[in-house]
Structures are given as C-alpha cells and as structure tokens.
Image (tube, rainbow over all chains, first blue to last red; front, side, top):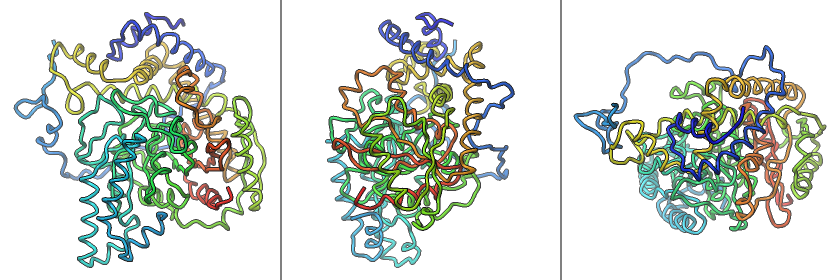
Length: 94
Length: 480
C-alpha cells in the first residue's frame, strides 16, 4: 500500500479535517515514515491469538436500575450559545 | 516543608489554611507566568475550599482531622474535569468549556481536604512526550532545572510544578503511553502510573480508552503513594475500574522491599540509550543491590521491539474516535452556524486542532478503515495480548522489572524542533510496554548527570503498585 497525498486527503476527509496544501505536503512523508515503521507488526505471528481489547480483563458491568438525578436541561444547555426551545441547535443537515 | 509535615502541622492548627492558600496562589501565578505550568490557576475554587476547611475547623467537626489531604494544594492536569474551572485538555477546540461535574479523582481528593489550585499544562489531548505539541494559543512548560529544556510530556506542567513549587503539593496527571513517568524523569520527581482501572477515568477527557490511566506526581515516594491511596478504587461511573480493595499505599515498609526480587530488562540497555542515562540507571540498580535486593538480567523482546508500533496503532485509533465528538456543538469552541453539518464540523475541527492532533487523527482513522483494520488495529490488539503474556511470565519470578525511563537526558527545545514525528514517538520506547499492557509503573529519580536529572523505571504486575512504591521509597535519601 502506498501512502501518498491522495490517500492522506481521503483519510482526512473521512475524519472531517480539511488540510491545507502545505499540511498535505508536510504530513504525507511523515505519516509514510511512521506507518512504514509500524508495519513491523506484520512480522509477528498472531495466528489464533485473541485480541486484547482491554489490558485488564473485564466482564459486562451492570449497575442497579435505580433512577437518580442527572443534569437538568438547563445545565446541559449552559455551555453553548447555539440552543433553541430547550434543544441544542446544530448546523443544517441538508 | 514536605507534604507529610505540612498536613501534620495543618491538623495541629499551626497553619492558617486560607493564608497559606493565598501564598500558594501567588506563587502559582508567578510560575504560570515564568514557567507556563498552568493553563488555569483556579483561585476562586482554591479559596472556597480553603475557607470551607477553616470553617469546619472552627465548627469543631472531629471528622475534619481525619482528612488525608488536609489543606494540601493539589494540581490537576488540564485533561481532567474540575467543576466550574475551564478544562481544555490543552486544546483550543475546548476553550471555554467549564465542566458541570468533577472527575471522580478530583471529587475524592476534595473529600479528603485537598485544595485544587489549578489545571496544569500539557500536550494537546496528551499527544506528545515533550509538552511542545500544545494546542493553538497555549504555552509550552519549561524544565524546572533548565528552562531551555523540555520538562517532558504530556503531563509536563504537572511534573514541572511538582519539582519547582516551593510549597507542599502533589499533582494528578494522566498517562496513555508514558505521560506521567516520562515528565517525572525529566523533572527529577516520582511519578506513579497505576494499573489500568485502578483509578477511575470518569471525568477524564479521553485520549485512548483502553490506555488512559490517571496517576500522581510528587517530590517523594510517600507523596505519590498518599494521593494514590485517596483517588484509587472502584467507581460506579467507570465500568472499567477494578473492584478490588485499595492498599494502604502510604504505609511504606523498607523491610518488605528488601525481600523483593527484581529483573533488569536487557533490551532496554541497547540501541539509542545515552551513556549518561545508562550510568545513572545502573547506579540505581546497584543502590537496590546494596540494600540486599537481588537482581538478574532478563530478555523481554516483544515490548521493546513491537510495543511502540502496537501503542501508536491502538492509541491513535482510539484517539481518532474520541476526538470525533469535538465539532463546535454543545460545549467548547463554537463558531456561527454556517453551511451544512459537514462543512461546519470540518471548519471547526480544521481550524482548532493543532498539527499533531491532526496527524494522530489521520493515523488512527487510517488504522481503523476498512481494508487496513485487520493489519493494523486488530493486529496491535493481538500483539498486546502477546506482550502481556511475556510480562506475566516474568512476574511469576520477579516483583519488579527495571529499565531506564527515557533513553536520553531532557533535550533542549532547539533539539526537539529537529526531530521528525517518528523520532518523537521513539521517546516512549521504554514506556509503551507497561502502558499498553496496563501495568503499574513508577519513575524513580536516580540523580543528575551533566547537571540534568535521570529517571529509572520500575514496572510491576497488575495491582502491585505497593511493591513499586516500597522499592522506590528506598531512594528517599539524600545520597542518590
């Protein structure tokens, strides 16, 4: 797989980042160098090894289903200027 | 005056907590200006907490005297939420965010009488080893020993402050890939990163959910142990916390340490290690030997060889999903709602994340994309399982593993500027193993070389932080 400018541009778009031309020029060789180095992971035989998604094994943890006080609507909305009729207001979808 | 003596004196009534807190805030503001250790000094909160303690002393409430952190100044890394105090994780995208709640560790510290003095500076979201990858508009903290050099990262402000403050103080930091031990090493202090899940992550602004560990930094081993004892333990708000009893970490017994067996990791003394660091770390090992502690040398290939790659794949993957929520809505930095949602989110994210955040988001997004996921993300998780297996085998025989904390002495900012991102990432080579596998580790200062501090790393098995603290406590003598 080749790490080139068009791949970096595509990945950035997926991540909702718009990179400037100079950022693309700077990042491409840097990310290529990093990913080439990290490709050494492929050397390791991991056949049949269960991925360790957590460093310490955990099981499903449930808490008792009892109602408790959470943030009020007013509190939840207190950090933004974009609100209307008790709701968050966002940019238009279409 | 040290932490222990301060708390004893404060409890005896010989220190006026409010007056003391005023002096602490004055010095903190000075250090914020000269050394950039704070993103925010929380003056109002600190004085409120100090006044509360003063009032409860007057009310003769007997419970107040049992508080373990009675009136003690505690700083909080900026990535950890403090109610009503701007908490940004060092990022412009979170500018203006004042959490509506305290992180569990902050709540527990306050309940034990802590005075929260402010939010310490860091690499943006923890993305760095030198605290130079700061968010747009933030300032890089300077090494307390030599201000032309880095104090390490990402908990750089925490470590610098822990060393430089003349007042008694312990810091709460956070480590994803080495961000407590590394700055502790560069700043000549102790830094404890406990087992993953020992401390609650509730209220931490996430970097990597399977990697983030909140921990403590301080001038003595007792200091980091004391604060850890307060903040550790199961938390209903974090389902990944471990439901096991918390040891009395601050009850450190030198006799226990002398019975321990340790192993030196051979691979950590090979390529890229500076001679000054090698000399001082061996000095530390010999010091342990002189205390009657036997050591052997062992090979631990997997963590040193593959740890870094596994760490960066797991860390950036998790970071890229965590950072997806920052989009200029609900809290943090906002702009006028222009364009459709894709345009608005893209504009906010592109203009408020710094370069390193963008690089890591791209790396992580790539590693999770269809076609690459198995080769990078899943593979890294499998390698974590193999690394853990190797560590667990070693811990059947040894109580702790020893290596240098960082391969080099604290570098000058001019030297750091010449490094590529990959060379920057290599700084974490000794630290990623324990961090990826969730193992507790402690930086122990082992003296100065060329007038710069060197740190030795002790790594233990899951939930064995007490052993590391007892070993580290042997270094609390002036002859190191």
